[in-house]
Amino acid sequence: MVEPAPAVGTPVAPRPEPGTAGRGGAHEPLVVMSGVQKHFGALHVLRDIDLSIGRGEVVVLIGPSGSGKSTLCRTINRLETIDSGTITIDGVPLPAEGRALARLRADVGMVFQSFNLFAHKTVLDNVTLGPVKAKGVKPAAAKARALELLDRVGVANQAQKLPAQLSGGQQQRVAIARALAMDPKVMLFDEPTSALDPEMINEVLDVMTSLAREGMTMLVVTHEMGFARRAAHRVVFMDGGQVVEQAEPEAFFTSPRSDRARDFLSKILSH
Amino acid sequence: MDDGYLAQFSSLFSQFDVLGAFGTNLALTFFAAIGSLAIGTVLAVMRISPVPSLRWAGGTYVTFLRNTPLTIIIVFCALGLWGQLGITLSSDFQTNFFRLAVLGLAVYHAAFVCEALRSGVNTVPVGQAEAARAIGLGFGQSARLVILPQAFRGAVAPLGNVLIALIKNSTVAAAASVPETSGLMRTMIENRPDVILAIFATFALGYVVVVVPVGLATTALSRRLSVAR
Ligand SMILES: Nc1ncnc2c1ncn2[C@@H]1O[C@H](COP(=O)(O)OP(=O)(O)OP(=O)(O)O)[C@@H](O)[C@H]1O
Ligand SMILES: [Mg+2]
Image 1 (cartoon, rainbow over the protein chains, first blue to last red):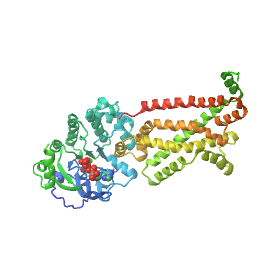
Image 2: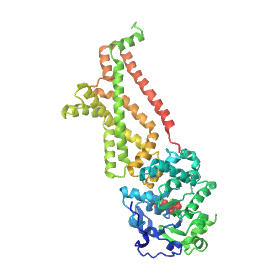
Image 3: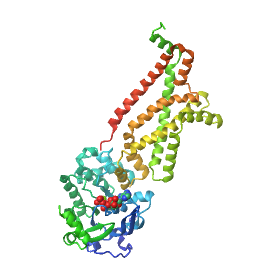
Image 4: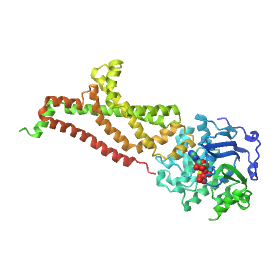
């Protein structure tokens, strides 16, 4: 493994970023999307996306249903391909396919709304599978690390159970541990709490908040404003496949600049 | 007809090797099952792979073999492969035909195994395949470690149906001159027209005795192995 050179000098195309008021500038860029376009058939889901996530930065992505948040997330580890534009991670462009892509995906952890744990494997095996099979970590070492991570997310005592025997909140915490086991450079969360019963939401958000405090780079699609205020450096608001506005959480929630953001916030705040 | 039924049956069993013939069908089934499972698994992986040409090849194989009558395939194996192309699978005449019949049964049923497995693949949520890719597993690893293990467990019942069909279809090996049950039944009817009902009953019951437990076993197994979600 070649250690990637410090990305300080990484050429980043100068992009006009309307309203980059967040602290994003303080972080050197880790994930850089520029001019990204994506269609689903006739539907233009991502329109000229320019977005940069700094190392150690926590970005919350919000926007109305169908605005392209999930799609944006999924292009970063190439679960969705893009039509044009570039995405680089730590200065390296996303490989198209094959081993290089698999290796890159190992650097990008992903947590899904529906957990997606491997149903036929125990909790422990869910967490060790990636390190052992994709990274060639010795099983004993992978197990020790997995138990440490499961302990950290508070489900160590469930290690030998099957996913179906766990509550939704526990499953999602296992899914976070599974992603962390790969030692990713960045973690993507796509509505990690929207499939959970209300009483389980906080146990997952707590884990995410502590990850954020420890300096993990995160892109989080969520409508949990408490989390955004507590843990995010920047809120990015999307609508109709475009990044409409971005700002520090407090500024965004109290005084959004665009009409669309104001309209959206009034809807989610009204209940 | 003053002989009792029992006497009729026992005279049949002493005059003809009924059990041996059933043994042949079971042996045909055994080897063809292993063969079709191997080929069918490869086909299923091809059909879910991200490579368009592999998907096409797998799909074409299935369409082609599934819609060809088994007798045609077996006759082709016996007369075409061996008779015309001179392909031999053993120097022993009988063994050669046995193996050609196994080959025909295996390639034919592989198409059905593939489709049964694909129905099993459909029981695995797409999200798990995405999660496997997201932790850096390649297609082969995702298939082997995540998708197929669950697909097999979700496909026990349809696979059991393929096995039952295979047991019964193994009688088509008569078309390749393999001395199995349907061939023996034909000889017996020619030689003992006085007891044709007993002859039919012998073979019909014989197959019921073999097939019914397979059905029960796969039902029980599919319940036991089903993946909790
Ligand atoms: N695989 C697909 N094929 C076709 N259209 C798709 C596909 N995935 C998403 N879409 C469409 O693309 C648009 C953006 O979808 P996306 O899932 O990214 O939105 P989202 O912002 O995550 O919405 P939500 O808040 O409902 O999750 C939607 O109109 C959706 O219907
Ligand atoms: Mg979504």
